[in-house]
Length: 307
Image 1 (tube, rainbow, N blue to C red):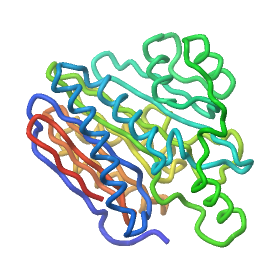
Image 2 (image 1 turned 180 degrees about the vertical axis):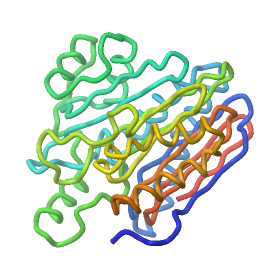
Image 3 (image 1 turned 90 degrees about the vertical axis):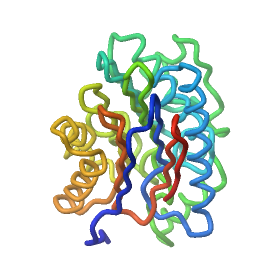
Image 4 (image 1 turned 180 degrees about the horizontal axis):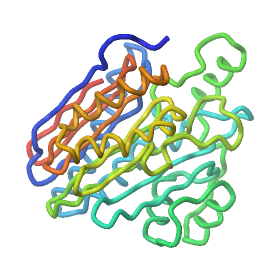
């Protein structure tokens, strides 16, 4: 059931010379586990902020933050990601930087631990923006990434969630969800990255919004950086990430831009989700229409977190 309440939102002022904001997915994390998800987001934000403080780029920062979340089995990305209808992991991820609008993504990718790193390699290679399934795996191997036993990416929690979904004993959603990060650095570069295992019990080959530039991820130094989470099909149909960026380009605060698009997603398509965003001036904001969306922000002026 989609709530009729106004989406919950949070905002902050400009974050000094650098700032990173991460999310751990829109959903309904049980009360007793919410602090764990917030702590996971805070760890990811801290390692990214440390990189930024040492002079690293926003692009490096969002990749590092998302990799940390992919390696944390609490979240629906990387290790511990949700399983498709055949009990397999199929990862989606993308990354974008706002100065030259370079972007890279992979989708329906199996057998690799950190899909966001492969998406970064796609961005750096520059020939194409998005690789799928076997083509994505071939690209990864050609660029020196090592495949892993798929079983090493599957957790007991993911197996249990799939069993519940397929047996009709409970909800088919994922408590946490997609992970993402947005950042800016001392040079003014904006970047965004998003990674997911996708919808629990999804059909083989299904691709959501996370690897799609303009739907799940968007960055433009003139507007801001955005990562989305939630009902992927709705985010694709409404092009939510790009829409949030365009609101910011027109002068809306990140919180206002996120809130407007999450409300539109709810009102037009009766779908839930969340958005994190940074604008061209360094302000940050987020909105969600789900019970929870764990998040953390870290930068030169300190850190905050919540759900």
